[in-house]
Image (cartoon, rainbow, N blue to C red; front, side, top):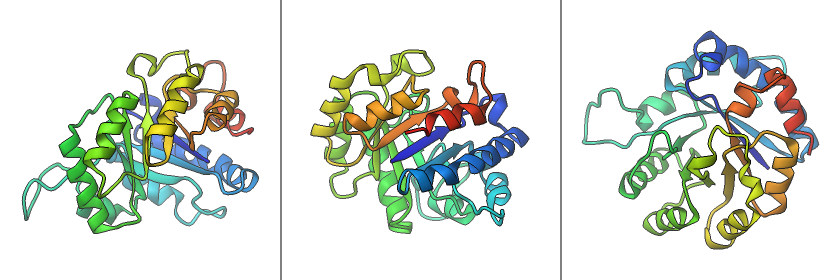
Length: 233
């Protein structure tokens, strides 16, 4: 069972606030892993905050329970020096565990996704690559193009639901179709906020959820309260 929390570039989750939020997640994540039989929480941090978040979590008494992943990944454009790109040599040096590709707010072509997968998996086969897709059809396309180096997860996120109050879990037929047609583990996102959303996603066959505002900008709750409610599965 996987929960991916996308910090995006909200003021509440950038800079010092990114570190503070990561420490909040760390407080909750251990209990989730213990109670859920190995449930995992990943935090997708803006690239500018990756090192600070990693350093803040490293060596804590409880241990670093959430896995830190990058919000974006890049492939090598050529041999030799690169400028401003989140390539394997840059990200692996920070110690992060993985990254997100093709979020609706940072789209990539199928060919770019394949290049990213090849470069990162060649550098470290254990590096977790989460590829987002706006539809089941796009996810199937991606898996076909990347059949020799599949993502660790495909995250289905209907763009019209992202950041809204209607959860993707209100579309069980979409999740079931994704699980039946995609030959790698499926996550679902968009509008996910509650433990009921997580339960439904798992019931319909997904391995977990991807969410952002439901934790970073929860209505009437603190991020810790929102996360504690989410993990009550």
